[in-house]
Length: 114
Image (tube, rainbow, N blue to C red; front, top):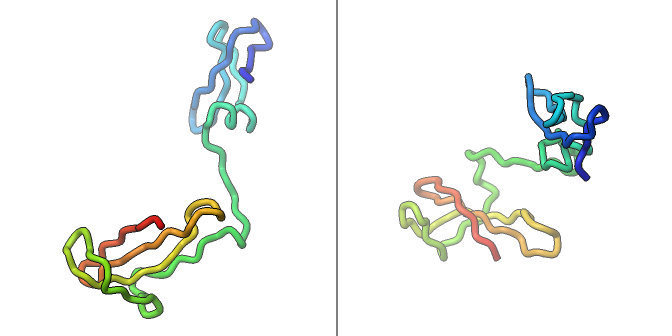
């Protein structure tokens, strides 16, 4: 639902000033700091925090000792036919996992959706 100016009932639109988002009346220029609901309504960014359970574990690029190898895929960058692979659930839980590959020769990483 659009936000209207409390002074003149004009339509208010978001704008950013010094990294703060305000709602400003297009008629009289009245401004007020935007609320979380204003930001959501206009699709503006809101700082998102995650719990420890939601955080992703990242395996360093140099540690490939625990990853399986396939010889049934060809690197789209260099044409080599050996790659490490792993699966991650990047979409909804009812969708299949995404398979990632890392070329053993050039280090190129790409994905394949199942």
